[in-house]
Amino acid sequence: MPTASPAPSVQAAAPSTAPPPSHHLADYRISYRVLVLSGLAVVAACASSVVAKILVWLINGITNLCFHLTWSASDTTPIGHPWGAWVIAIPVIGALIIGLMARYGSEKIRGHGIPEALEAILLGRSRIQPKVAILKPISAAISIGTGGPFGAEGPIIMTGGALGSIIAQQFHLSAAERKTLLVAGSAAGMTAIFGTPVAAVLLAVELLLFEWKPRSLIPVAVAAVVATVLRPYFLGAGPVFPVPAHAALSGEQIGYASLLGILVGLGSALATSIVYAAEDAFKKVPVHWMWWPAIGAVFVGIGGLIEPRVLGVGYGTIHQLLLGELSGRTLIGLALLKAIVWAIALGSGTSGGVLAPLLILGGAIGAFFGQWIPGGDLGLWALVGLAAMMGGTMRAPLTAMIFAVELTHDFNVMPALLASSVVAFAITALWLRRSILTEKLARRGQHITCEYSIDPFELARVQDVMDSQVPLVAGVTKLQDLASRIASGESVLAGHQATFIVDDEQRLTGIVTRGDLLRALPDAAENSSLTVAEAGSRTLVVTYPDEPLADALNRMLTQNIGRMPVVERSCPDRAIGYLGRSAILSARLRLHEEEHDRSSHRSSR
Image (cartoon, rainbow, N blue to C red):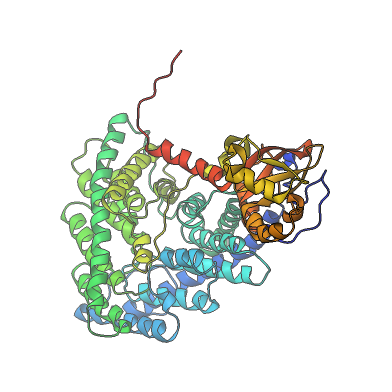
């Protein structure tokens, strides 16, 4: 009786469901579909670049209108407004509008963008509604333009991802291909805002793709490059925060950068804790969540009244920090106020990004402690602290290092940035179970793991785990005879859940499983001449010894079977091994032992 899904009849010399020939084995799994995805990524990058321009234009326009009573798209800040204490009302009005948009438009506009993109990738099969692509940048522009202490990167990552997803949904693409275009749109949006293509690709790898494969990496890189080419036409050329280049750093300075990474890492973990403490506090407020952003905005307005630099996106403040223009009490006041109003506003569920506030916090901490570090200037230590804060809070140290370099074009400081961001990453990873990005998902019951590793099934070959003792039985054998041999404990037969059927020349002709025996035994009791060949199946699904174990496992899953004969490619009708579920699990056991077995093994000669 058949044990696999329906398949064509087979000839003994050529099993029906066989793996591809050996030349398919390669370093990467890639097909010409990557060219199609790359072409669509170009479209997504163009759309994201346009939206990035619109977002910046809206932020500047709303900021000028609300704080300076002029309609202009020129770059500006809330500093120097004429409102006095009435400035508190401006963030509140903006937050009320956002609450209404979230309540009656889409709840997806709440938050800072990256967790929502992660959720769409992991749970939504990379499908994002078109209205999110419209409402997210508008809500973010209102939030930041009315003084919200946020950055534009989170919203543009979400919006760019939405555009990529929408483009993908117009074609017959798999969920994995939709994910690639979603992330390509996000990377293009980030590149368009900051001019950081390499960091955008690294961010995709460290936070969004959950894989390192050519099929996704190439289209994402294409999107980032296209956004880089378009950026001078939309948002200008050159680094966002140009600074005088530092000389090559000494080993002593790199050591101080590591120590600074510890301090910033502690601050990063504390900031993350404060954000979610604020979120927990808002959940206890006895009003609908639509009103929470307005409540949080009251604190934003008060903070802006005390220190106007905490309002808005704060790119000018970041540049001042990197130029070493802020020092002393100004730094500690800026860091404390920005952290408090940012945490409260973000915890309220309004719309805005986390990256720009993190850059301010890290830069302020770095510059503050840099006052006592010998060698270097405040701008150097602000840059080191900035990278450490991003690397620790977002759990993306490589992205943080490259991001800081691309923002400033100060390449000599790269070793110090690597040291500080990795140390801060280590501190937060040890202290907190989840990052500021994944904690939100975990609170919704959607825990994810961010560790990338090669699947042990991809590394192992069938020959590494197969059983070389092959259970064979002649097709003319009486069914009752086979049952008796298994019941008597014959080692080869009793140790396997299936037996391979062969002809007089020992060529494979079929397979008979324990299930086949149980179903056929009542008939065998009435018909003692019933043979194994009549009870088994002629549909053979085989594997080869040099085939990756992952391919064999996938074939078993798609064919709904639990074991396969292993055959040589040059002689596909001769069984040389037996592959079952237990053998496959042994590969996983081997990985577990490599991770946890710390016993001492000395090589002997």
